[in-house]
Image (tube, rainbow over all chains, first blue to last red; front, side, top):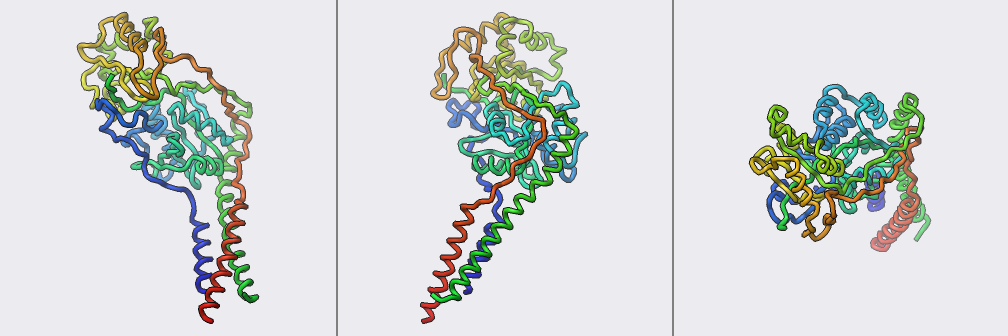
Length: 198
Length: 226
C-alpha cells in the first residue's frame, strides 16, 4: 500500500512539473576559434549568434517581449532603434502589440505571424534573422534559429546561456503559447570571421 | 488477487488520470491571457490580409566596410563607402549581398571584428559560413572604384576550395544566383491560437502502468507477507 501511494505521488509530481527541456549550450568553437585559425572545425555557428554583451536583459520589472525584440534589432544592426525602443517602451507586451508599435515607423521593415506558421520560423532561422516570440507562460524570448534538430532560444531573464529545445517539442509548445513571432527584415550580422587555407 | 487490490489499482489509476487532466487544463489556462490580448489588439489593427515577400537571402555573402567613426570627414573612407553606390559593378554586388558599414564604435565591430580587423579602413568579404574570401585594409585598400570592382569580381570568380557547403563559382560579379522568393502568408486578421490537445495516448499509458503497477505491488506485498 505504501509503495502504491509513493507511485501515485511520483506520477502527480512528474505530470505537474514537466515544462520544457533545457539542455546544454550549443556546441561551438568559442569566440577565439574562428579568427585566423586556418581550419575552423565548425564552419557555421548558430543562425543568431549575438555577442553576450549585446543580449538585452529583461528590464523595468518585466519587459520580456521588448527585450526579445531589442536583441533582434541589435543582431540586425539596428542599434539606434534598439536604444530608442529600450528607452521608450517597457512593460508587458504581445507580438501584436509590437507590430502595432512597429507600424508607427513607416521605414521599419518587419514581418510577423500570429497563426503558428512554422514556415515563418524556418525562414527566420534560414536567413539568420531570429525573432521575438511568445514562449513559456506569460513570457517572451528571442528565437535564435534551428541547429540540427533543436531550436535555440535566448531568454532575456538569463542571457548568459542559450537554451536548446527539441524542435518538434518547441514548435508544439510555441503553438500552444499562441504561435506568435515577429522579426525585422534587415541584414543579419556576418558570421564569425575565419580564414580557410585556400 | 482480491477485490481490495483491484479497487486500489482503480483508485491509483483514477488519481493519475486526474493529475493528467489537471496538468492539461493548466496548459490550456495559460493561453487565454494571450487570447485576450490578441482579441483586443486585433480590433485596433487593420483586418486586411497582407502577403509579404520575405527575402530568401540566407546564402548571400556578406560585404563589410569598416571605417573610423568620423569616416564622413575622411575623404578616402567617404569615397570607399560611396563607391558601393556609385560604381555600377559594386552597386550590383551590393544589391545581392548583405552589405554592412561598421564604424569603429559599432558594438558589432567591437565585439566581433575588432580583434581581427585592427587597421581601418577595411573591406572584408565573407561567404555565408563566415569564411573570409577577401580582406584589404589600411594602405592596401583599393585606390579606385575600378580597382575595387576588379578585386571583388575576382573573388566571386575564384573556384571554391571549400568542402561543404561551398560557394558556387560564377562567371560574373554576381555572388549568388537569384533565388525565387516564396510568399509567406502573414495574416493580420483575427486569430484563434491553437490549444494543446489532450494527450490521450499518454493517458492510456498512465492508466495501464498505474493499474498494472499497483496490482503487481500489492500482489507482491501479499506474497511477501504470506
